[in-house]
Amino acid sequence: MLDDVLPPPALHLPYEAGPQRMALGLTAIPEAAWLERDAQSRPQIAERVRLLAKRRADILADTPGAGAACGELRAMLAAHLTTHWPGWAPPDTDPAEHPLATICAWVAEDFCLLRPGPEGPVLIAAILCFPSRWRLAEKIGRPLLAIHKPVPTYAETLGRPVDRFMGAIKPGRLAVRYNWSVHEDPTLFQPTGHGRGEFDPGITPENAGEALWLRVERQTFRLLPESGVVVFGIRTHVTPLAEVVAVPGEAGRLAAAVRGVPVEMERYKSLMPFRAALLGYLDRKTTGKADARGDGCGDADECILGTSGQS
Image (cartoon, rainbow, N blue to C red; front, side):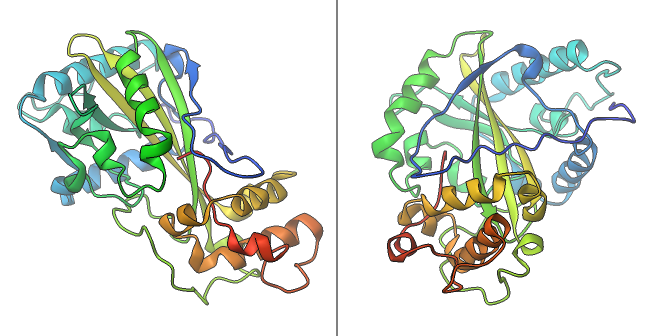
């Protein structure tokens, strides 16, 4: 159970000004910081329960032999919540229910389970209610390198570092990283949408603050010591762009980050349909006026660039 009064969700702003590159960007965190608990937890959990009832096959999947690891995650999560969330107690559950379905109603985080394999870590099970434009059914049972094949430069820049990191995680050691993008849809469950390039005339520098959202994934990693499986946790935050730029300095910092995204990542993350409107809006919030040409680009070279940051 969640307390009636919880703090507002953290506003994670993980983008950086300047040229963007793919990087792990890991930070160690204590056990108590594994999961987030805030005023958005309850509505997100309610949405998770709804999706489990209506779209179970889309959000829950496993592979043969994954049952022990799923049960280990459920036990670890129950112990963590009992210790670190005052007032929480494991609710009555159906013992025949899948462990990942049970924990779906406990927290706002999604969880992917990754087991070491000859081709790298393999996705053996997941409860994924809030995908950011990927389908669980297309990824389950595949190694990370194959899962990330559509992601530009992943194989060259992150493939080996990620596999090494996954193989080196020690029991009791937790790490966090962040991934961000800008979406034109605040829906949490988004299994499709990568690679869109068509111009969207409905989004303009005048309405971008209300028409666009910053979507951030807080991604955590830890080891299940008995099974040797890595738990990849994902907490999703969706914030109206207007709230982001209300923070002093963030309009200019985000504009610089967007201008620094490689063009291939810009295509992958579907920023092209509204990039000019986004930058026009951010530039107005930064300087008080739009770029002279009204396209949100500071110069010809910038108009050739694209988007990303950590991914």
